[in-house]
Amino acid sequence: MNLESWYAKGTTFVSGDRSIFYVREGTGIPLLCVHGFPTSSWDFAPIFPELTAKFDCIVPDLVGLGISKAPLKKDIIMAQADAMELLLEELEIKEAHIFAHDIGDTVVQELLARNREHKGTVTWLSAVFMNGGMFPEANTPRPIQKLLASFIGPLLGRLLSFNSFHKTMHDIFSKEHPPTKEFLESSWNLLELNEGRKMIPIILSYLAERKTYCKRWRAPIEKPDIPMAMINGIQDPISGHATALFFQKLQPKSHTFFLENAGHYPHIETPKSVLDAFFKFHKIT
Image 1: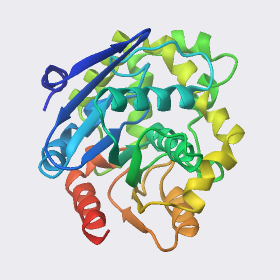
Image 2: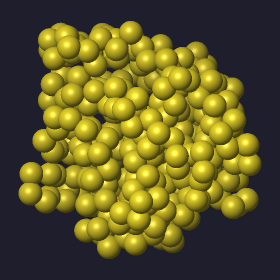
Image 3: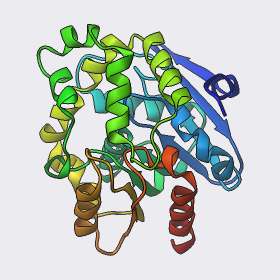
Image 4: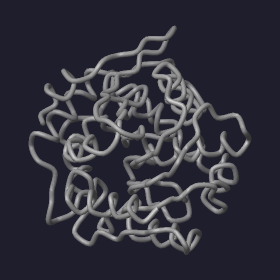
């Protein structure tokens, strides 16, 4: 499914100064799919038909990415979690499973932390994570990410080009399954459309938030209230094998799936392997 077809399927919910694009399709128990940085909900398109056959799938763009918009200055993860809760409240979703990737993993950690405090608006039934910087000590951000998250980020952001985006993506995908030309060009054009050069440094400030809120976001993982799993493309140089091992150490009774031929975007690189792992987890639990 190309980018245009994906966005033609969805709608945009507007509330005050927030506009949240989402695609909703399927039947069954709701499943919230939370995408990664710096891409969009379109990331889930390769596995969407299979997911919608068994779940009522809600796949939004995070604010500042895709075509969703909201003022973002600080507490980026809090703002993203607020947007997810606002959307699900609008859709009258009271309970749901979660499937998350990259920055989406950290957004989900915040959502789970709210439920531990009895302040969440949705009862979460399970959570499946894919390659994300959930654990700072097991995460290795690319040099460009560190620079963009630093004080020179706004200046550097204005200098970002398709060539730098292309190189970074190639570096984090597996050698066996590099990103396609369509994925790279469409994702870059979408990023440009939503003021990506400006938003990337702002959103990347969440890297520092992971340290500030480490205990808060670690607690739901260390002492889970719901079934959890990790599906990990171990060729990912950012949050690959080390992240999966760290998750497995924290949750020895949970399910960790190591995908040998995938990198940072396993659901795009090896969609069948991801679906096999995801449905195996849901069958077991």
